[in-house]
Image (cartoon, rainbow, N blue to C red; front, side, top):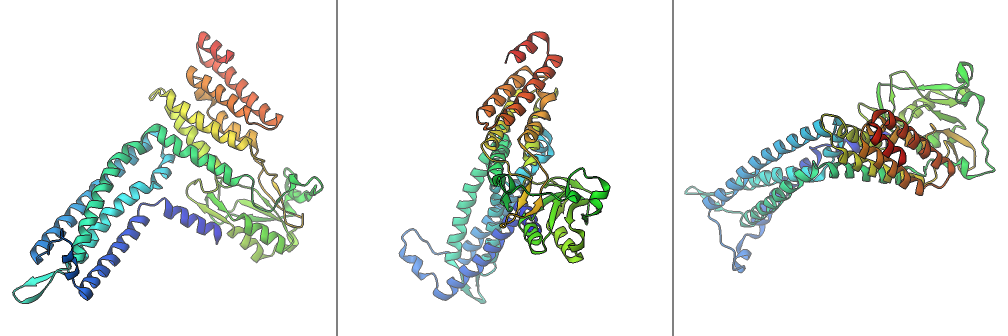
Length: 438
């Protein structure tokens, strides 16, 4: 259930309805509670405050009606502005950045504040009584709180007017994705699923022939295939549960896909060995450790964040936009992410249990793969702009300063040479010479 729970929590986090709904329910409860207090203890105690003036039924109705009408009107305006800003960002920076806007707490809280104020006023308004044929009742404390909510709504509106233009600024969008990438590398590496085979020189786990990659159809037939129940992107993998299942039933699992990979229904996303111990309930439990959805998310997919930065940078370098400085900002954050990754130990894809037995074989993905993902995908766009190409080489240099192994530096060197070669073919001779010199 963990990957499905993670997926549900991620969907809730990126929704516009959850926080406003909670605030609306809170407003309903607060309205009923404050009116109850007014009924139980009255409002005479408010007279001790010199600034307080008692309300008549007509006056209280007018105040609450004005606040409620204004709040719901502004809520509609806030929603319209939010949709316009999201549409602009999707067209300017790419549809994948929508996930960042959907997670924006500022927009969610702003919308929730006005809806909550409206509902609170409606709840209180219906309790006011006053007329020739009924006993007069005015919930003075509730009216005072409605005025406080009105002031809070004005403050939130001012914040929202400031927040929207900042949220669609190119540098802020890139920085938000870049910080997520740096934080994701800090969370994912080193991995927490079992012990690292590379960390123990004496472990030297033996991979069964049936689980060796490239072993052919005969070797793969010796292992039980776990197939996807649906088509979509793998959004989350419950790695801890997979390790527990493998240890409990004395199995070895080989993962065929990683979070972010697209998989068709019926395709294999894991293999279980030995096949004789892969009972039906065990295979079902392994399949339940994968959450498949309709879109990629940054929940466990660090490559998705890299792709977002590359997409924003590639759009910025397109002839229709021609904004190399946004591309340079993307390069800076890609470099920051790779520098963070270079300082960390990339764990072995062979994961051991606490007794040192091989239990899970993950899909290998090392530092050079991330370099190719970040700069290799970006290369054809960088090579067409002199400023971006030079900055890309400077970024590779900064990343190299944080590398700990010759293999990491060699991956950066290969990318630098490939970029310089492509820039020589794309740029005019004087500009190409500058890139080669850099």
